[in-house]
Length: 181
Image 1 (cartoon, rainbow, N blue to C red):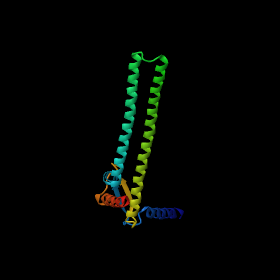
Image 2: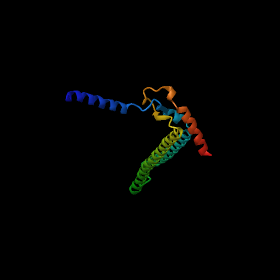
Image 3: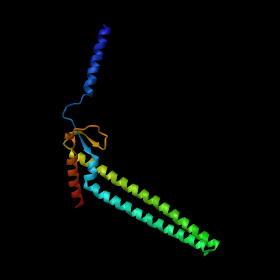
Image 4: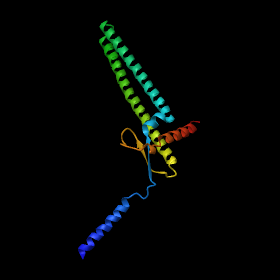
């Protein structure tokens, strides 16, 4: 009798487990957004890209100017040393000054690089927040159970019918345009 009851209990447990792992309904849809398209078509990100590129170019100009000045000072120093225009003490002081300028330039490069990275991180976070906040509004009717981010090959196959990228970009651009006014 115990043997007959055992399999029946296992069958019942298996049935209960199957029902808990099955989706509640077929109405739950999944959608996806192509991140590369957002980054190339979202007006906010286009504006940010211009700002970032301008800042990077400014940093490069600043550092190149410092490097050029240091190289010119070092070349001038070498010429004057060869022409015996300095005493040994003067030469040591000038050489120390040039080395200090080089160290200051290195420190400036480190500081500007860190500031640049922080600014890029801030803009990336703002982009991410913007996408998440817009998708919450976009999906307030709970039309989709899940909205995935498609970037590169992280999704191996997706039916284009579930691609909501164009709608999202259009809505985000409208929202951004409204914020700029």
